[in-house]
Amino acid sequence: MLMTTSEPVADDAHGGMTAQESAALYRLMTWLSPSFPVGAFSYSSGIEWAVEAGDITDAASLRDWLAAMLGDGSGFCDAVFLAQAHRAASAQDTIVLREIAELAAAFVASRERQLETAMQGRAFIEIARAAWGCDGLDNLVTACGGDTVYPVAVGVVSAAHAVPLAPALHAFLHAVVSNWISAGARLVPLGQTDSQRILAGLEADVAATAARARASSLDDLGSATFRADLAGLRHETQYTRLFRS
Image (cartoon, rainbow, N blue to C red; front, side, top):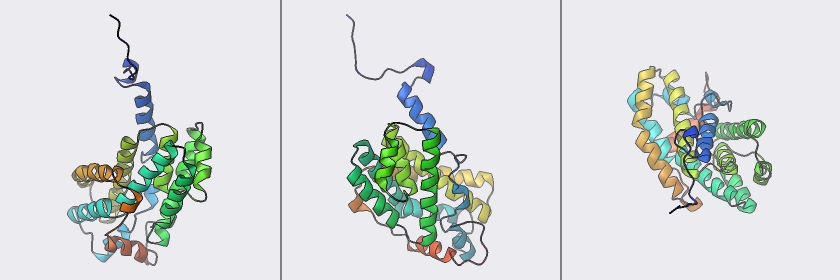
């Protein structure tokens, strides 16, 4: 008896994945690669001041600092904004999407942090639209109004391309943490092996933060990383700087 199913069927041409899964993976790997030109390499998110102040001195202290930023600071908050923007964009709820975009733009602790996330968000959208345009993306971007910060931009573009939330969120957090480590490695400085050890050590933290963000609402937003926020503020007047934030 011939059986039929409405479930997607994996295609050997796509490595055992469905065509949609293959496309989603390819785009995430491209959009959140260090080579995607959003300028992330020029920002340290306050890590430069933390190194100068002596808060970060080696691989262990950098790992602890980043774990706090990820789980209790900007990492978690950005992940919530990405998740909420993705859901609103997927539902074509432009009113809610604009509210999320406005709140995310205001939810930063310093002028340089605002510059960092706004400029990366703008670059991400401009490049995604130019190279990866799709139906409906322009309307979603317009609905956000004004500058669209980086996590909202990633959420909107991912939703427009039907990239599922879970992998988009995980890939975003991996990219953010990788950039933090890259900045810390140049500032401390650290070797490549130590950098990879830190990234490996944060694997569970990334997964836990992504899961928590998916289960959270905007009411759950909050930060408990005062020292990291202070680092971002102090970096604005730091005498010598390699990074823009």
